[in-house]
Length: 188
Image (cartoon, rainbow, N blue to C red):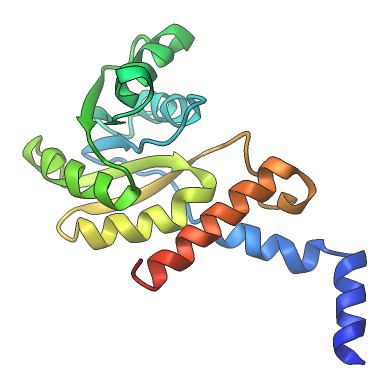
C-alpha cells in the first residue's frame, strides 16, 4: 500500500523525486584563476567554447586550449570550434587547438593531460556542459593526479536539471549521462 501511494504521489508531483537525480549530474565549482583553460570536446553548438571565452576574458587563465577529437567530414573539433568562437564574438581570445584521436572523456584525458603538462599547466579550469561536470571531473582527477582540476559548467540547450523529465532532448541527455556515469563507477 505504501509503495503504491508513493508511486501515485511521485507521478502527480514528480519534481521532488526527479529533480535531485538531474541535479546530481551537475558538479561545477566557482571558477578560480588557473594556469590554463581546457575545453572538453563533445559540444556541437559552441556553448563550451563560448563559456571558455567568458572565463578567459574574466582573467581565469592565461591560456585557453580546445580539445579536438576527430569528428565530422575530416575536421577535428577544435578546427570547427575556434572559428565558430571567433565568428561569434570571441576573436580576442587566443584559443589553441589540441587535436587528438579520443573517443571518450577518458581517452581525451589520457591524450590531453601530457600535452597540458608540457605546456606548463599545473592547474586547469576545465569547461564542459553542465550535465557532464560530475563525471568529467571524476575522470580527469583520476587521469591527471598531478594536476589541480576545477570544473566550470557551460549551460546547454539540451539539459535542464530541474525539469529534465519534461522534454525529450533533456530526457535523452539525462539517460545517456547517467548510463555513462554508472559505467564509469563499475569500470566500463
